[in-house]
Length: 477
Image (cartoon, rainbow, N blue to C red; front, side, top):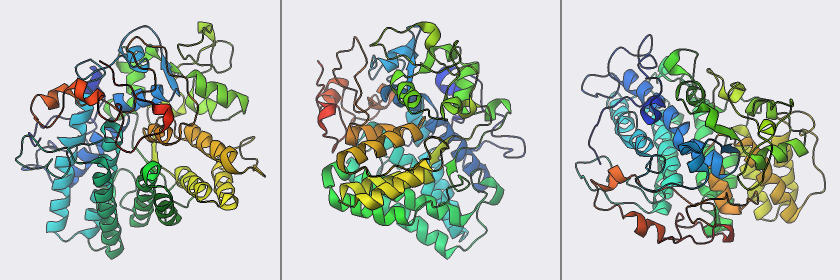
């Protein structure tokens, strides 16, 4: 695993041939290669980590998950549409996700995160160490949500065939990493990253809140298997999580209008040659239209009629009624900061957890807290909703709020909300796929990676613990 390719990963260009990332990693941020620890300072490495993970969180995996939960769709029959229709495998253009996998582990990924941690520990800077550990937990938690069992405990070693750690073991280990991060930030010795932290400028209090919300996220990802204990742990963590409804404490990416610092979704639209392929998803636009959701203008371009509409491959709709993203709506703006971990997510974790543990009064309170951030008519409080109907309202609100966020796929796998009709496809999938194939380039060098047919036959091509009926079992030949 630890092959040190030392490629610059802070751009979608490595994935799809778009603009490079040199400008992101130069100028007033860096002057040397950030992914060469023998030459790079901790500041340079840390900026490289952030750039690499912005690319991963907004790259092809995020686009696929947006399509799979039908917030996005696609046209033109090329790889973007194929991804939406589950035409992917370990060696295909979209299914391999080799660049995304490299973003997780190599330059700008876990190898550099660990080096930042080592450098921070060596200088006694616990503030920096705590923030780096949060990045470790965030990166590995997201990767495990997408691929399930992945290398972690042996990933940064001389072992070229690291074992795949069980997903539940990984989530448990990440709880420890986050607990340690909170302790480091509470101790607070050392100057921390200051301006090298592109998210919060080294604000320890904000990072501590993010760590608690991530703990809540990872607890709730185990709830389908572990039940009430997971929900109770999520409540405890989220109670300490992001509590600022203004959005100023949300964990968001950093982007600017500089060519290679742009929002990755914007880069895809304007520089990849495939921007016209990505469209709005019919399921999401229909739901948002029905409730008059003001976020439509944040997420989508107006269609030719001035409204919003989407495609789902199962329903024939006029092409001029479909919205796309070529106008670069605010969530696709060049300097748009994509939300990764937020107050709204924290409130909706509390809402779901209280609902599932029998306290619908508090569940409704936290749902209405999340809705209050949106604006009319969504901010009007709901009253008298309980039980399954309340859970449905909570998860639909989260589906809308987590637009562009890979965590939306974890929510769908756990709850089967929204009720999605799988995309028409020629790949044989009768359900929304439960996970990604491991990249073939990793299987070529790691003997612990099973071949594609074995992956399909394991857990019904789902992550361990994802057992909800809507996921079915797609053991394809």
